[in-house]
Length: 447
Ligand code: C2G
Image (tube, rainbow, N blue to C red; front, side):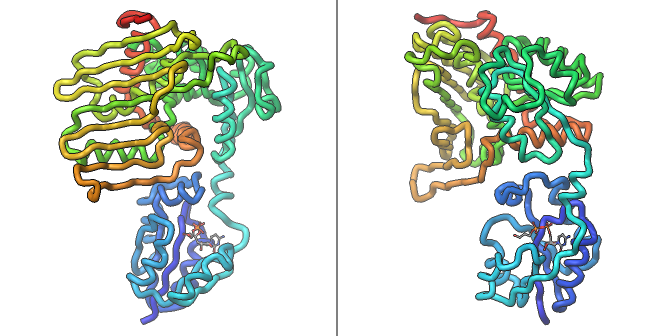
């Protein structure tokens, strides 16, 4: 019996794919089809895949051409599969010509002519374009602009920022540049907001009132009630309102949370997260606006692992802050301690003090260590008493999380349903803690 193996994403299955499968099948008696897993597609830069793995598997199954369907999850798996399944022939479309010659050490490699005039990319790009406007601080927003290029159908139309003379060269080439948000709102379908947290509520409301979808750096507002009211308003109007914390959209961070919640390190006893920068150093007086302080810049990121792992039902919290908000020259620094019924947590953030930017989650069996900068997580370790038991995890992260955040936003708009990676209760608690800090209702100030 001749076994043939082939691989693909098979997104929005079309006759180019079925043609390929048919001819691959004709090369032998038994056809194995490897369908790529989401994480593997992300890692190899295919980030606009429309259908889920299970939908794509189902489509391949329905062709009736595959005798066996497997999932392709990692680089180098093809060699393992060829050996494991005893494949005699590896077949793939001619767009890959030469790329898989190395497999000829293991089996025969056949490149089949690609069907002309059809591709998943074309099918995807027939969708409507999504025109997006940027609101807030140009230096943050430039990261979104950069990553938006990788999101199918998304076009950055313009920016509304207080000082239009402080733009990067790329931002200054956008069609719309204004300091008036309403100018921008007229020209776009959706907005990304990255501004001082005290401005979020007003800016979100203005965008929603204009009928625009919103992706906003957390928190939405400075009280949970104000956040709720924005969410309810967005729902009423059928608009997407999504929290933006890039770390929440990183595959590695997501896996880390799942492993910890699944009991991998035993019972969690402590979560400790630190994020600091000296971006606005003592000598840098050129930066006038756009200084949100340590809490504005880092607060929601540092709170994320605490709330995602321990939940939001803490019994007490204490915010201790040094220096005045935004006055980084004095060594502006904030520490928050949380007490839970059977665990504790702490976070430290600063823009004028430097510390090790690591995340440590302590458990009764082991601990998780995420090295600095943990908020751009692509790697973490589970460490045991005996170092020989330690486990290392790596997941490719492209675009620091911003890219996947934008993809999720675009998908939520297209599907008319929110699929934020940040749950409602966490979003509310972020409003609560950030509000307590900004409104000064529950802080201990040290000099
Ligand atoms: N194909 C084709 N004609 C088209 C489009 C696709 O023959 N018009 C073939 C491709 O060459 C490939 C298969 O259909 O052999 C699946 O295509 P994709 O879903 O685009 O998957 P691809 O990214 O090529 O994945 O590591 C290799 C990958 O697993 C192959």
